[in-house]
Amino acid sequence: MRMNTKNLITFKTILEMGSFQKAADKLGYTQSTVTFQIKQLEEELELELFEKIGRRMELTQAGKDIMPYVDMILQGAEQISNYGKSLSEISGTIKLAIPDSILIYTMQPFIQAFRHEAPNIQLVIHSLQAGQIIQAVMDGIADIGINCEKDNYPDTIIHNNLGTYRILLVASPFMDRGLLDFVTPHQRKPFSLICNEPDGYYQLEMNKYLDKKDIVLNQYMKVQSIEAVKRCVMNNLGIAVVPSYSVEEELKNGALIPIKTELDEKIYNAIYVYHKNKWISPQMKLALDLLIKLKADC
Image (cartoon, rainbow, N blue to C red; front, side, top):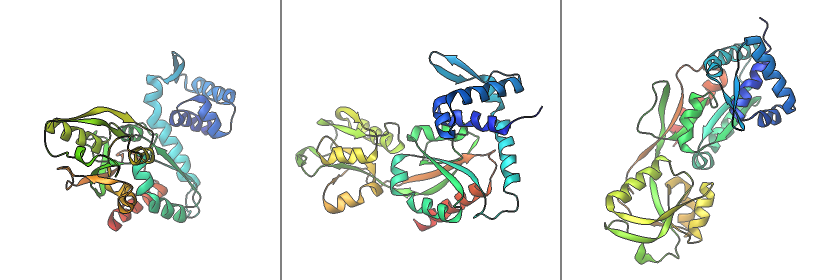
């Protein structure tokens, strides 16, 4: 059986982008071309890869089962294409999954260094919620995930420490200072906790702390980004728990103030993860090496 690798690339792109139309947009095809390529691939494999559930096209079990083989074929083609080339010459893609706060405040030096060392590699960054990072790596949507630490990891995931950070509860300087006692237990507060990642590790840690202290706030308010969180807090719409590295400038210029809690001195870990069966391509090795250097420089 002769297999067209373009069809496999289209198959992978659908999974990464989440729909036929988004895959078509990314690849520069019409949606009908993507549909035709998947139909052609299904006929070649004699398998049904997608099924319609409601209004969505979902991957079938057969589609899930062949994913490791699809990855092997595409990785093999990439190895052949890049054989004998230096890092500055190789082509290909590397996909990272990173929460918004880490991407904005700590990963810029990594991105600059990677672009300098491998200018022909397409760097794809998925800005995902913290709770989605591990699954993105397991599903092959991302080669490497950057995240805050978790309590446990699947056996198929390799995880390494990337650095440490602290968390802070912050408020507007216009907030009534009499309401900012978060050490004394058994209190009711007339404002909300603002967050962009309700399932983020440090957010869950703060929730546990508040529960233990029996400090009750109004229903939390969810926004889309760490920058939106900070803006809302600066406008005195509530308070927020954030990584300390994300508010250094605002604390320095007085746009935000810290709220003392018993978590102030606790140290948390940032981590990077990848699948244990993942082929370590030259660009992935470069990325892992740069992450180790980033850790050393922190």
